[in-house]
Amino acid sequence: MAYKNNKTEHAFQAFHRDLRDNNFPPIIFMYGEEEYLTEWASKSLADKLVDKSMQSIDFVKLGEEETVDGLLNACDTFSMFSERRVVWAHNFPPLIKKNSKGFGEREINKLTDYIKNPNPGTVLIFSCIEPDDSGVLTKTLKKQCKTYLFDRLDRSQLGAFAEKRFRTAGINVDKSTVRYLIDETGYFHRETEYKLFNLENDIKKIIALSDGNKVTEKDIDDAVHGDADRFIFDFLDAVTSGRKDIAFRMLENIMGRGGEVYSVLGILINQFELMLEAKELYEVTGKQQKVAETLKMNGYRVKKALSFADKFSFSRLKELLSRLYEIDRKIKTGEIDQNLTLELFIGRM
Image (cartoon, rainbow, N blue to C red):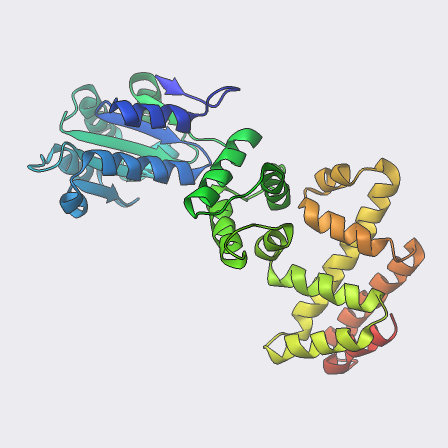
């Protein structure tokens, strides 16, 4: 039976119920882009079935180089102390590619024979992100075995995921703050690489930055948006507010910490390109969220870019961007001293 994400239940919820009821056959198939859930499910199953003192023996994670014979030997080994052994075959080659080297018809037949008659004392987990649906192994697993599709969470599920981790750390967080966190991460942006692993790491950083009682939007901004974003936003705030002395000091500080002119120049160029493009799109759509969706970019970055772009006319933004392109060209051709270029740029803004 396959468990897939629908409007009411995600596969991780079905797995949690099966875990509570100890309802697992000898072979399970997990796939989907949320590897965090695959890892959570596999380790949770091991915690449920394997004696704590035998984890290193009875919970076996096999690498991508494992052979069919090695996998079957691991499955056919009985445990004397654990309720059942757990063998996790993650990214097993014939799952990902139909004609994987070293996995011919003979090896695949061995696997399908085992699937028909598995060792009841072992739970074998097959997992990957994107299986090859044309492969015999994938077809067999989907047809004959319990299957969990761990795809992306919806907004309510993601909110519950975040809230639980804050509660576990002893921190209360209101729903509006959680919504702000979700929006700032860009989890729901198309083609984003941001996954649950990233969200959990950001939540840990937010908890470390908070005062231990309450999480603020500033804590979220500081944790979710990296050093480069914080530098450019603070830098532009200083420049556009007429505090060029602070901007010069910030530039000196970042250079003193090992920053390079090329990297800082690249950050400036990227930001001014974003400011110009966001300003143009906002003129057409009138909606910040629509701009973020069109650019496939984090809402926070778009919001900040628009706030700075409002301080410049279109012609001024184009002029400053052209100047940055010219500085980049002259540095690369050796026409100007790179150590003076950014100071000159700040002075003329």
